[in-house]
Image (cartoon, rainbow, N blue to C red; front, side):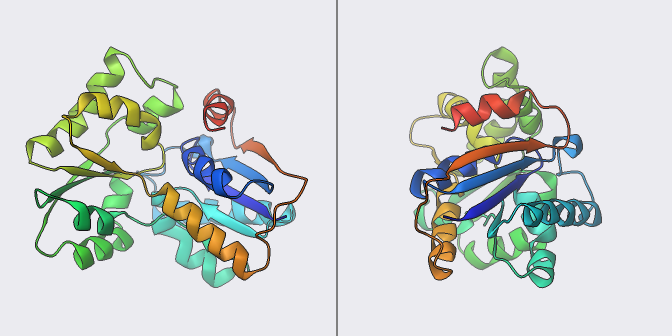
Length: 249
């Protein structure tokens, strides 16, 4: 059995935990929501790296064998630093531009992400590597994180907020939309209702779960144990954490 720390700026990374627990049951998971500082999308790299350091130290004090950075912005800002400074494996979020580029029929893909992710070199390098011959339309999911943290996953206001960021991608001809923030999958049912038929959405969380599975296998820690479960922690009171954890079971 492994002890796995999972961190995010808020509750959105539970969408990643959902995929991980689905293929790696029987392990102990510690989920840390840094909701006192959510969202990370507008924070500096130095600030995010400092928070990632502090949360990693906390995980290590609880015996973590691996850490998942279940946040695109934090991955871009801090994962290279973490890997250089700690002797445990880190698994981060990979921008899913490659599968979108390979699967598009129209030759146009959309990327919904935070401002921090869209300007990060990790995302830009991936986009430039795989976007030859296709058009990439980017848009910040304005207000998406706040909707999820406030548990406003449906209703007229949520529809308006989501449509304002999704519609420009559809209007530009995108037939595939990459979800570049771990909060966004909780809004996926709403996005699918608002989008025309045939629009494909790509959530990178399943790929992250498979990568963690490979990492644990390489360390001989992939065997499930009896002490499994999910421990929820946060840097400030959160009404969304327990609710979204229940949804993610």
